[in-house]
Length: 154
Image (cartoon, rainbow, N blue to C red; front, side, top):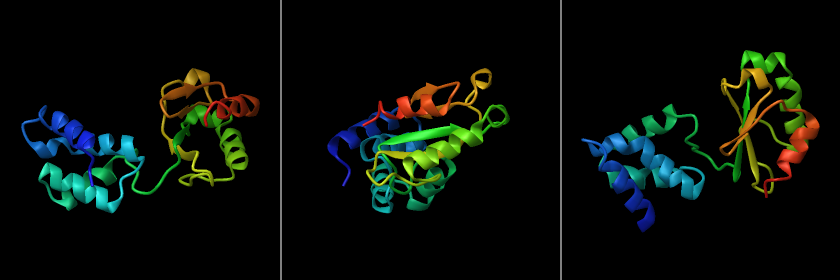
């Protein structure tokens, strides 16, 4: 069930829109902030709370690539796969992350700490290769730098 805090935040967001259903994307983000992903049951509860159909809300959830419909790690690593990052060693950093964490794109580490996802340009091409963990941007990546960055996240 949606918590009272989740409902309150969703209602506050919905007040900003002429139509309650327009708050769908933000409502999903609110709930995901608490639960880390959106299960089918959660999607149904949010749809009921916003008084829209599950199908409408599902179409929103599948449109946004940062609405997670399956469990993810506590920390999301977004690895930029733009042309600039490819030219500056994206593949090397991606493969290094895969080996260090023993996962691939879309998977969570066995301890539930990390999930790695590809992402288009992060807008820091002059500092490629680049990744974001949660909301923190890391640039000019090397394997040694990746190791020290990962150590910061528990």
